[in-house]
Image 1 (tube, rainbow, N blue to C red):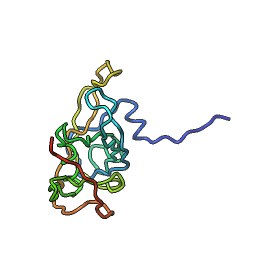
Image 2: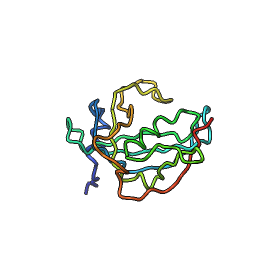
Image 3: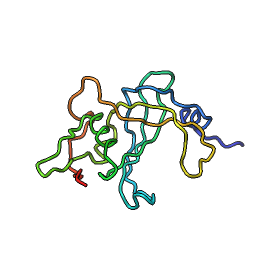
Image 4: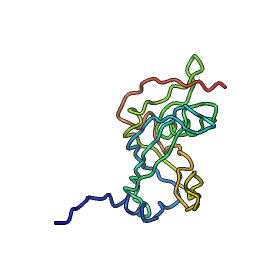
Length: 164
């Protein structure tokens, strides 16, 4: 008797080389957030968020498609992505009285809604020398007409110094 396997159709489409159309997506869920440590020579041992995103917009057949992004948590690399992510999910980017940025925990980001701009680029990562096109998050967008965190959880406190 043959064995069967349930397959996520969006993952299968991506595996077949179907790119998510370029454009702005205003309803994107952060499905998962993992803290990873950089293995790069330039930033060894520094933390970053690995995000798994799911498009909820009904645009060009993209609904349900997933993509991944990395957001650095170290100020030396100009924390634009972190600031954009915070703004997109409704978090304040104001520094506290000590001059530190309080940013959301992975638990607080999980399930949050954000807005993103997707572009197509070349995959220049090591081991991907064929330079195939891929979709990527170019930036996190400021949401339209929202205020406060776009998540069901209450803010907690993590701090990051933006001073070099």
